[in-house]
Length: 200
Image (tube, rainbow, N blue to C red; front, side, top):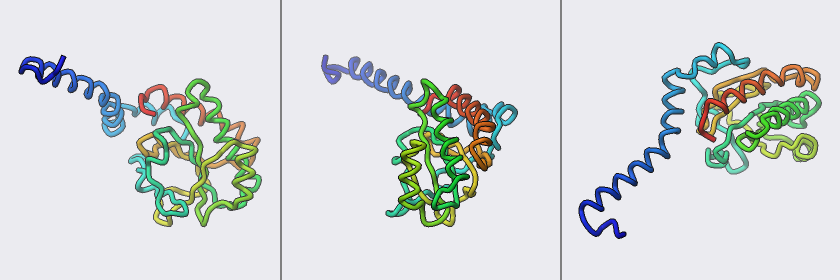
């Protein structure tokens, strides 16, 4: 049927389009309103990481690559576990955190595809040798560096939602033993976020 055939059909066609648009936008609207109105305040009582209030936005994080600031669209509408390091050669402590963020993602089981990992250097970037090692041994494939104006801190791990809101902060670990011990806390927080969120 041609929706332009008569006024009644046109109205019905427009109502259908509006309904479909509303259904598509509703989860996104709920997620935003929930964060800003404090619907998810139970996280502040039960989470293991430091709840950032207000959140650090993607624009405030200022991730960079060789071309300049990295756009949000490069982050593929996923949840991200982000490790900030000052060690360009990614020695043992850095490797323990690479191991940690990879294990936290793997522990999300059927939700794994909603999550990825990012390693960020506070200086000029990780060396090519260290990136190659981390890719091979810890399956982390995304690396950036930080602008000096970034609000993120070194030796921290962050959780970022698909809209670029960074809401939880954790201290980086010193070795794999500590990674195993503390990893469960990060796993629980991320599971909770994925469960209550319809985005990503």
